[in-house]
Image (cartoon, rainbow, N blue to C red; front, top):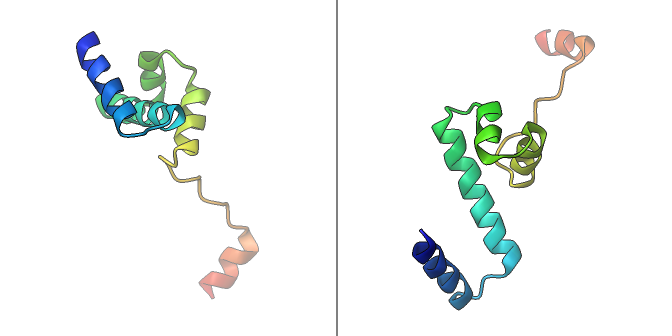
Amino acid sequence: MKQTFDRLVDDLMDSGFFLEEAVEILERTLITRTLERTGGNRSAASKLLGIHRNTLQRKMLNFEMERKPPQKVKAANRRAAAS
């Protein structure tokens, strides 16, 4: 495992990646794969990752991995749209 990680670090350095970019790639990939393994269950994914569920959700928003929740439409707007 360490040898694989060392090769990855060498490849990133040779490619001119900055630390921030490398960390983002690693976090995004770990989050994506963990969510796949847990069937999208964020609570289970956050436990596997060792972070709080709110931290996971914040990272997902920062990485634009999820859409923001839809805005609630006021009743007056729904009635006008239905007419």
